[in-house]
Length: 123
Image (cartoon, rainbow, N blue to C red; front, side, top):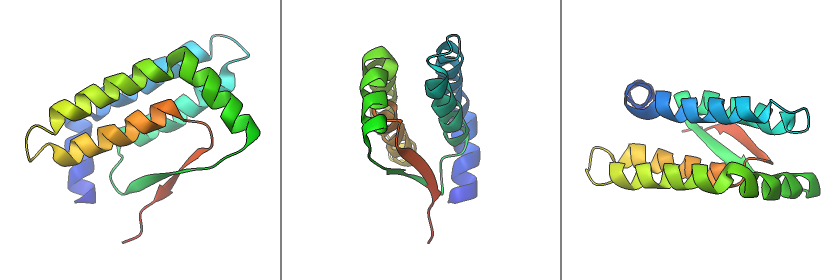
């Protein structure tokens, strides 16, 4: 399912999801202070293009917590609501459920991008 899922994902909604992360990254990189936020956005844009076979592990720490709070207030809520809304629409059909679940993964990631790292799923 991984390769086929990634191909279908990229064609159906991967370009749009990755585009939103790239736009957020570019907007963050306008100022020097927000460059770490932009770097996180670019990292997750790559994940947005081909998410099947990958998972996200969340870490903790004071710097991550502070970054997540700032991110949440700036753009996290709006991005998360977008991914949540699209995920709900995709879950209407049985075929769209795997894609909707990926969107829910991105909705959570949009709320807490700092301290998150991408790991491959071993099956």
